[in-house]
Length: 32
Image (cartoon, helix red, strand yellow):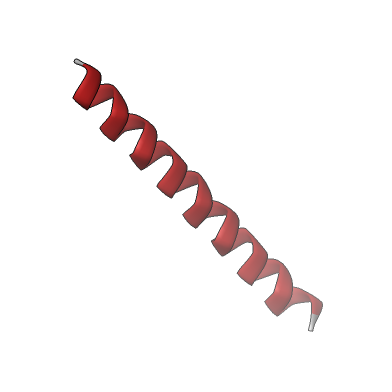
């Protein structure tokens, strides 16, 4: 259980970071 929770949290953080990165990339492309 604990391992599954840790993996879920890691995937969640990675997904959130990737989504934020994509948003920043789109904003940068649109602003230029």
